[in-house]
Length: 274
Image (cartoon, rainbow, N blue to C red; front, side):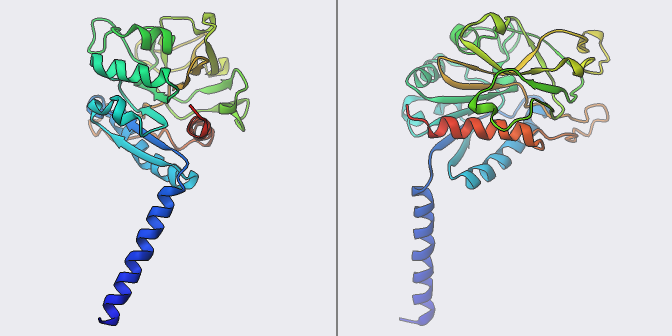
């Protein structure tokens, strides 16, 4: 047996041992579902997320997987994971709806971004899932949004492990901000964590007048006390639509405070027992 062969075998054993040890030492597993087909801003965010989360997973010793196959939203597949992410859209079929609801009711955890909460009748994403939009998210239908994507000053509304080490107010990355049908302040199950601070107004640049907000109360991050869940309105990168380049002009994960919020939630949810 040659020395070269022996060295190769020893290297393989060491490498495999390291990989198995690394996997064995992982605290929990995260699965991200995405579509990444509609709206360049959402596609850009998904690509950015699928680069950022693996780095965070390595630093914090958990496993991050992602899939665009929403049929994986079934009991057998979900049983492998402690945290589910919806990066851009939501599940659409009755069987997927049922699997996700049961997963959450049995103690699973979820973090949803931006468009994952969108629902508007007479659109491609109608409000046809009452449990998700009303009982779970509490927001109901989409109401309106600001344009174009702009930074906002966000204010911590309630102290929570998820807001640990966040400043009382901070400036966000540029985002398209959503308004909702339901007033989340009136829902006893909802705990609002971040809202737009009044110093942000006017928020948006138009050109349409209704795309610029001058006043009002707008929650952007919240949790439902009955579940291990977090909704984050951020997730819409600024894109150069006007010149036809579709170039990404801003990145969601280039913000220390926003990132801390997400990491706090991941570690809280991932390390908690069902």
